[in-house]
Amino acid sequence: MVDRSAIGATDDGYTMEVERGKIREFARATQSANPDYLDAPAPVIPPTFLTTQQFWSTPGAGVFSKVRMDRKRLLHGGQEYVFHGPPPAAGTRLHVRTRVEDIYEKEGSRGGTMTFVISVTEFRDDEGRLVAEARSTAIETARPPVEGGAS
Image (cartoon, rainbow, N blue to C red; front, side, top):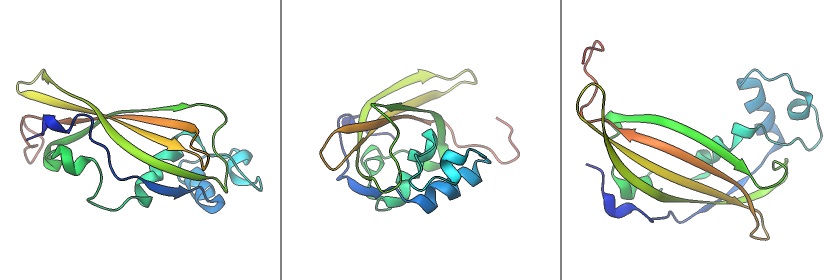
């Protein structure tokens, strides 16, 4: 069961190094042929590259450990990125911190209550300037999925 007292909770934060090779790998994985991501000496990141920030965090130590969502009933409800200037380029160090912005419930169309958890991840440069934000919606369904897809 989701812990509503986690609204406002933050993680300890961590540092993410934006690496040229990782930008290239991400661009290839997303089937991009954009030379700005593949061939530039200091390529900028594709907008959704910030999703990879999870690889720099400590597993199990993030803010979602405070929310206590049941991963068997977890759905990804959406992702949004806002850049406050040009996208970061290779060689940039980003300081990452996530907070739980809101938790609310809504009745599902198939019966059962869905719990929505809205989180905001901030990406700041070495000078502390806000470079980008990622807003994510996670949904916990009322029941775990049933084998075979029947509800």
